[in-house]
Image 1 (cartoon, one colour):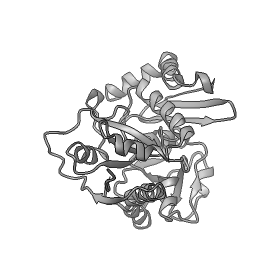
Image 2 (tube, one colour):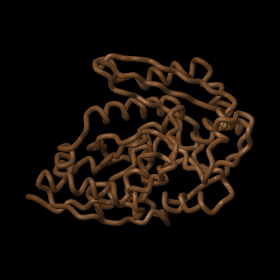
Image 3 (spheres, rainbow, N blue to C red):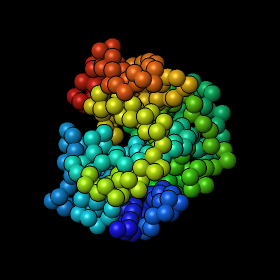
Length: 306
């Protein structure tokens, strides 16, 4: 029997945009659906999902709880925010075609300082990954924390005494907020699965699973899965400066991953290629290789607060 699929989403403009894309895709395949807004604060429910190593997805937890409580049928996430091991009872049903994976720099005005190695400047980001990579390239800069949704962060760039801030290109482009003066950071490796949208449902809900599978993008799912395997091999979370990008070429997958110290002074990077047929374990193998090549030493320092 057909049913109306309840799509869970956070209330931010970007989250609603993503959920609306899923609703439109469901409509195109003949499925009725509605958006259900879930507040992300006050997650004190005793049914909090248990994630691997105790790491909880700060942006996904409330939706996971609503899903397990049967208040929604599916949840839509920015894939880079999702823990590498989903909460018990929840499965990945689809990954949408990837948008831009790049990071961008939104300057307040002048950008000439970006070409000067010894220049001093204050840059804003809340991402330890972006912070570490930026300091590796610009060791004389100062990084300040920047929190809030994309609208709030863009406003702060105008109001604060920063030279600018770092954003994900996809987030701003999806809701038409990318400033004309934004600079593509082609040298900055993205977060695993950045630019991709994941749709999840309950493991026992075959109706929703089959409905969502209609628009699963195979190449995006493969590449983001490899990147997330790399992240998991390094046992990293949002507080660890780990980056990865897997790209499908004609008959193979090119994976580049790196790990930096929190201050950006130490960096280990690795690139490997695998044929499509042998790409299943690429992320895990490359992660292990990076750890063996000095990555473990960097991780140990991070865990010890260095």
